[in-house]
Length: 208
Image 1 (cartoon, rainbow, N blue to C red):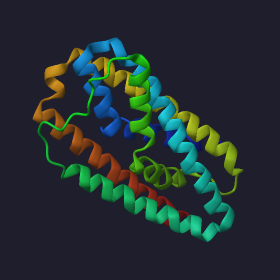
Image 2 (image 1 turned 120 degrees about the vertical axis):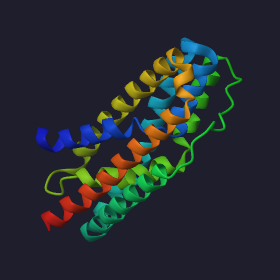
Image 3 (image 1 turned 30 degrees about the vertical axis):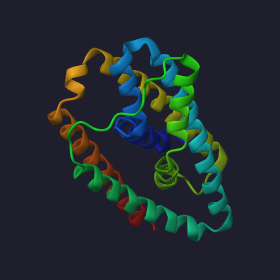
């Protein structure tokens, strides 16, 4: 895989991991409730959860490609449409005080397990990975080395993002709860997702 092929994936991943979801909400909730004490535990749980769900997604993706290149192409189109759908949904999402997850647990091991479970068992994560990663797969190169590099890149960026959210939330508690901040984050993230889906569709159309 060339650097020019990896860089767009890294940039898109860096943008997308910043969009708040269940995992980020959990990390922020622990930071708001307990400060920085559990930043490492929640970050480690997120990292292992991302690794688990993305590995499961990539195994399924490899099976689709092994079965049929045509089906893989269909999956890429469906994935692009799904990204656009997610972006529109996020743009239109209501703002306010979201229902915070239960953060009453204060034992480090349980906090880690909670973060791992939330990240791994979110079905949207697996669907998202299956929709997102194929946009960057080079069908003329070996599949599994690409998957290993993409997965390592995404997990690293997701881990750094979770840790940054924990530190930010513990330092800016009032701003995190602001409706205007929530709205700005939702609309920025929604726009990024729509653009990712549109660019993926354009890229595929221009390469066929």
